[in-house]
Length: 452
Image (cartoon, rainbow, N blue to C red; front, side, top):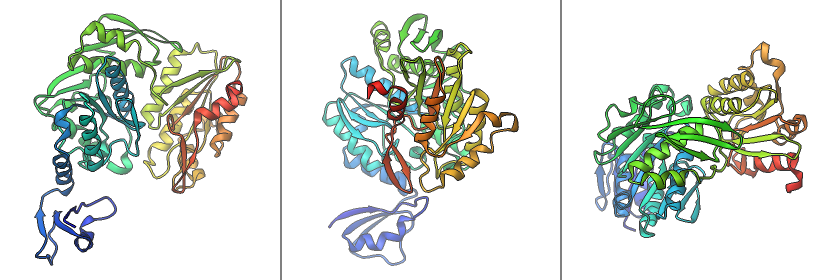
């Protein structure tokens, strides 16, 4: 009894349909965009322009506005969000600070780990999590901010101390419908930052400066290709790591690839803006470990290299393959195992396949998380991106275990296997059911059996 109910218009169901049911179950305050035709005299009805936004503010107020008790930094963009947020979390923990993390892989309050169901939780879950961080004495929180979260007002009511933009490429068009709407959703996060915050953008992305156009926050840039406030430069790149220059000072990192040079430069810039002293910062950056499921690297006794990565958008696939191409000598065979998720943006499927076959010696098209779709139908859509000239380089094996097993059987000393799409995930979702599945475990079974 005495509950508050907020009627939100969702993508499939309109919460206004359940107002009467909520009242019957004891709701005494109804927040809605459209008042019902018949109103209960014992109920307070609050009409608002945007129920989603109002719900975010209500949740923040209910938990005593926890974001104001933290330095909350949001990371937004198509690729790199998880890596940058996670690296920042570990950096600040290693520096001795109490910190929280909200990410695709996991949510953390210092050393306590909580399962993540979405990249960005709903307002009630988010504020409860942030309140627990504040209660535990956290000074910082690093949070992935997805375009869905911005569009659905999941971050309404939050006070951010900073925002980091990574890049913007083809993804989530099943939800946003057009690239322009996707860009608009991303940009609105930076538009809402307060004057007291910083906005750090990737100057190497053509949309980087667009994000800063209307922000009130202090504007900064990072880059590995052009002049910027925080400038990274790759000096050496191998499967052992990166020799990187950050604003003129050299550091060695165990992280691999060009995209991690961007990530580390963004981390360097954000930490600097948060007041970390430069010499201590550079020392700690050099100690950072690779993020789970992001360019995870293993090598068999027979000399076969395997890489597991979460790449599941055209640009991410291109970046990971380009990173491998930059490192390889050219004599090795590159075998790519890749699929595409079901019930998601269908337009990117043939594009991802086209990129994979153009940059690999052999591509095995397989199942990812088919969800409610037929995995073979998804693969057929991917095959549309394979031209006649490349048709001999692409084979289809629907069963993902068999696909990875085949790649391991084909590979010889020096060859490279990339298993893309699922990264850190430890499940495969089929017809609404999640079954245990871990690309890394499958690779170990067939490539590194002595480790099992």
